[in-house]
Structures are given as structure tokens and as C-alpha cells.
Image (spheres, protein in one colour):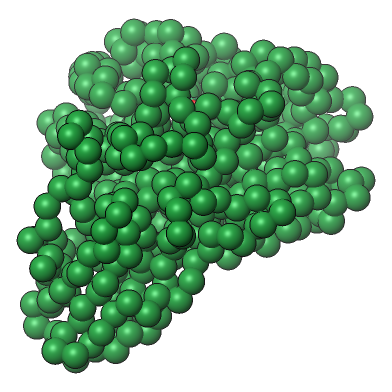
Length: 500
Ligand code: AHR
């Protein structure tokens, strides 16, 4: 029988709440309809933000939101999105579907959304097509409390107090849609642009995020780190707080990525294997960063991750709208357990994207809304936020899969907070339930505080607007406490169990 050995006497660092972050881009129906409907909408809203969606998001304790892109960020000129809404520029969203962007959601609206969610802010600046001055002025507009042209403009537009910008991205995917740069070129631009991302308030410093690699492009990480830290004077404290990594799980070739809901055993395991590749990506990028930052002061920001499938038939290909099944829940469970276990380096992560785009936690259809299986995984895993990681290891379990695509049968992570231990474990086998013995270093007596599971009769099951609660988190009863804790994990399931 497989055994999960937990050393509850050995903590391994805090799991940054920001690992459970989200990403929202001006793409398809993520911002418009998904999050923001405007003050005059019939859909119940608070200052334009839809109430049903915000309420649901609060239940998963969203710690951080990234905005305005994505590729959109390097085409976004923030001044288009401030002031009287009726006078804001109407323009084409060239990158995503060629639809009209009326700029009714801008900086003030993003800050209002984060206020309602009670989450940290991650603003992504435009390095690809914007100027240093434009980036610098945006930071001044958002964060300066004194008298200055930008701070005065903010006040004229109704925001007396500056906001807190917790994280600022200096460009996005500058190896691709953000300017097709070489790593050396980008790194030199990073050095220049970040200089003018001023810190106006010592008590609320902005953490700067450098654009890192696309999936396994280790050369990018190596060259960017090398160029950034070549002749970099000591006094440049806060020069780079995090470096990003983007990795999507795509089971097929780009032109035929595969259906979100219709897949066979081969594609199921291929998807999980590709998701599990995140372990190697995080390890290898971290090893490169270690060479320049052995004290691990620079965090890895996996600020775009998740499944990328073909769009739902009949929908705009530029909107990236896809359904979400139990397979998505497992991919979320795999990634979140990996990030937890690498919390010494991974300090932030954003699933792409929050609503109606790629692997979303929420889908909407006009006034209707549903929570996806991925939502329920974020709900179960929320107890890891800010908890201390505990050393844990699974032994006695093998790999599962097809001839070509194999993954570990079980993946897990364990943390402790306020005396309660949270274990999250995924059974990746499509067909077999797994028994798991849980063994502690010293702890002998414990009680189960709560236990929940996400599973369904068929791994392709998903929630629809006609049946929004087909796949939901349920109470997990598959454990016994006779002679120690034993779990029986159903096939293709994500389980959370909390003990004290
Ligand atoms: O999330 C969709 C797109 O994927 C983002 O805009 C871009 O950064 C990435 O390529």
C-alpha cells in the first residue's frame, strides 16, 4: 500500500498566499461581462462589478489579481482608460478577436475590483509598445501621495488617495507578443524601464517582476539573469523582486489542441503528464536563478498557467472560451501541489484566466454564472495560503498511464497553520481507487477537522448553465482512523483532509 510520510516537526517555509493568484485580461468575456458589467447593467453589480462573481470569488479567498494582460498589456496605453467614461477612446482589441474596446474598465475600475475582492494588485506595464515615460507616469498616477501632475490628475478623476500597487510587471512575454526581443535586448530594457518604476512610499514598496521564460526556454532565463546582474551595483535593492515563467498545458499541436470535454484515455494521461512537467520546469528555472541569487531573494512568478484547449465550438476563436471538466480539476491540483512544494522559490502564480477564458474558475452566460471544477479545487486548497509547508513524501506508489504517457499515481502537499494540518492529494489514475496510509514522524493522536473531495462518475463531467452543480466539492468520507489514518482515494479525484 502507498504510504504518505509527513514530518510535522520540520517546516519548510511559508506558502505565499499569492501562489493562489489569478489573471484577468482584456480578452473575450473575461473583464467585460465576466467581471465588469457597468453601473447601468441589469445584472446586479456594485460599482459595475458583478455581484454574483465577486461573491463567489471571495469564497476562494483570491489573494491577488493580475491585469490588464497578457499580450494586451504591451498594447495598453493606460491614459485611454481614465477620466469620463463617455469620453474614453473606443478602439480595436487587435490581439484578441478584433472586437471594440471602449476602455470603460481602466485603472480606477481595476483598483475598485481588487478592493471588493480584498486582494493584492498586480499591474502589468507596457514595455513592448509603450515609453519609459508612460510607464513611469502610470506608477506616479497610481501611487504618489504628494503634489505632482499625475497625482493631481488622479485626484481630478476622483481618487483622492493613492492605491497600493503590490506587484508591477515590466513587460509581458517580451520574447513573443511583447516585442519579439532577444533575452539580452529585453534584459537591457528591463534595467532601464524598472529604474523609473519609482517607489513613492517606503511602507508600500512595489515588487518588480521581470519577464521570464516561455516554458522550457532555459536560455532566456540564463541570459536575462546574466545581463541583468552584469555590472549591477549593490545599491540596486529591489531591482528585481520576481522573474516570471509562463507555461500552459496543451495536449495537442497548436492548430488542434484538443477538445476541453471530449477526450480519451490517451489524451487524459497526456494532459496530466504535460501538467506534471511543471515540476521539472520550476526545478530547472530555479536552478538557474540559484546561480545568481543563492539566498533566494528573487521569487519565481508563474503568472500564467493552466490548460489551453480548442475553444468551445461556435464561439469566437479569439475569445479563448473553453469548458472545464474533472481533468481540469486534476491539472489544478497537480500544479498547486507543485507550487506549494517549491514555496522557497515560487512566490506567486496566476491561473489563466479568472473568468470565461482558458482554465477559468468561473463561467458566465449573460446573467447566469457557474463555478467550474477548478473553482472547487481552489476552494479546497485555500487553507494552504500563508501556511507553513511540511516535509512530505509518498512511497510505495508507482506510475499510472498509457504506454506513452505516464504520471505518478498520487501527488500531494502538506501544510500547517494555526495547529491544523492540511493534506491535499490527487489520485491521477483514471480507473483505480488508491489506498494511502498516512504516517507522521511523532504525532499519534489526531482528529479530522474536515475532509472534502472533487470527483465525478466520468472524468469528462463538467458544469453547464442547465446543470451548474454536476461537479462540486463534497464531503469526503473515505478514511478510517483505526490504527492510524488510512485514505481510500477514488479514481481521478482531488482530496483535501484537515487534521488537528
Ligand atoms: O492568456 C492568454 C495569453 O497567453 C496571454 O495574453 C499571453 O501572455 C499568453 O501568451
